[in-house]
Image (tube, rainbow, N blue to C red):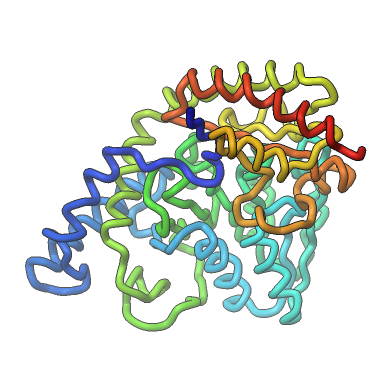
Length: 378
């Protein structure tokens, strides 16, 4: 049997998304910048997708900039503000995705100052810590909405209010929360928000940056007038159409998906935490579709490989860091020792997860943990 529990890395495309995309590979292949009928047809599809994405965010269509994914959107937001404002101070957290952390580390080498805020054992950033970190030269605060490894949901409303009070742009990497949580950027006063298509049953290689109308960015790519002169390059029309369709479906089915995820989470938590010497990394009240467990006396990558041989897909954390030998920076930030962090397993599920897959996972997982413990030198 095959069982997929790595939705946080990528989700399977919804068949309705694929159906919407197919005509734009061959019949409707025009360049949306062309003025002939082929181009106008593609431009109309682009506009519809932009509207669908904006509706899911509570934004205006013209505030959506299409990108190649979450990483590009995070870079455009952070570097776009940094190079526009000039050398100053940035506030972020220690548990951000590498596309935020490494962008900030790069900017530090260019003379910018960065404060990396700690988190508690549940993986949440304190709004008070954000406020204390703000200085006169602070040009940006960037805190993720949902952590991609442990599912911890950050107090975005409170952090956004602090940034508003100080008149500092606030960016949030919402890649793991977008399409799964209710988001209204206008009500919250968010300046910049990054999202990705392949986390919500859309195609890979497509994402967006929401940019509030009053926020000014320096482009990272120079060329044509695409995406309101902020992101040059001919748009990926089939991918964007798929992204738009995924957003339309998410808007209709978000509550149903959430209810299903909560039901699966309850089963998975109960079973996994009944395994001797196990614990949950992060918050019991995190995103319903992600859980990160620790198992004493095992190595996480060995467990992932054992599960893979049994036909089960899982991970030790972020897919972008799976090949690194260092323990997860997120788990270390929670206060785990390197040995504890190495014994982690991230399970994530979604719209197409079947009860039979959960049954199989919960049957196989304890067996594989026991096998690894028998040969463990710890």
